[in-house]
Image (spheres, one colour):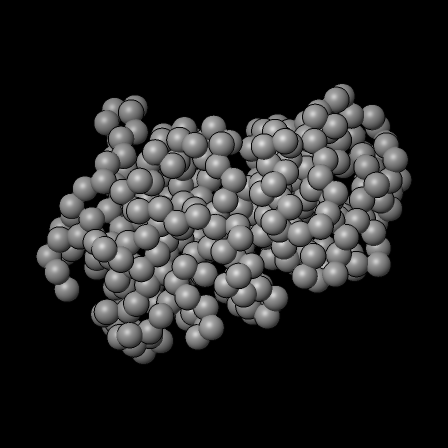
Length: 332
C-alpha cells in the first residue's frame, strides 16, 4: 500500500465549506477493515451538493466525498472478502459520515461491500450505483403494493437525471407503460429517445395550483422532484395507486390534502437507499443484474476524470447535466 493517495477532501472553515482535490496520508484515512484500489466511483446529486457546499450533506469534517465506489480489494482483515475481489458499495453514510469513494483508494467495513458479478464491469456498476439502487427500490415499492404492468401507466419525474432515466429503463424492461416528466423538453428529447419509447411531458404541466382531486391518470409514480410537481401528481394517481418519493429537487415542503388518500386509497412511500437493509439491497441488485446489461448502462452514462468532479458538480446543481456521471480513477 502506497503512503499517499489522491482524494476530494471536504473541510469546514468557520461557516465555509471548502472542497479540494488533494494528496492524503494513507495511514490517517485508510484504516478500516477493507482497503480497495478504487477503479471507478460516481458523482451523484448528493455528492454535487456536498462538493459545492450547496447543502449540509457532510456531517463530519474533514471527510472524503463520494457516496458510491467500486474497486479491487488490496487488503482485508475480514474473512468476508479477500485480496483481488471486485467489489462495490453505495450509501451507508459514505461521503456523509464516513470517508467515501471520490479517491484513488478507499477503506470501509467488509459487510457493507457487495461483489460485482462477472458480467459487469466497474464502469457498469458505477453507471448504476446509488441511482440504480434508488430506482429499483422505488419500483419494488410499487410491485409490493400490487402495481403490476396491467394496472396502467407509471409516471417518472426527473427523467433526464440518473434516477429517472434508470427507473424508466427498468420499468420498460419489466413491461410497464411509462410517461416521463422533464424540464427543458426540447433539450432533453433526443437523450430520452435513446432510452426507449414512451410519452414525454413537460414539467410545466405539473406546476399549477393542484386541485383536491384530478383525473386518475397514473397507476403509480416515481418522483425525484417533490414540491408543486409532487403535489399535482398525488391528485392524479388512480385508486389504490402508489407514489414512491426518492428526491426533492424542488424542495422538501409538501402541501396536499387528504382526499386522494381516503377517497382513492393511494399510498405515499419514502425511499431510503442510503441506510436500507442489506436484504433489500441484495434483492434489488439481483433484480437489476437480471434486467440490465452494459449496453443499457452506456446509454445513460458519461465518464469523467476524477479531478473534474467539482466542475461537473456545478452543472449538476444547475440542472444542466443529463447522464449518470462515472469518475475514472485508473490513471491515479
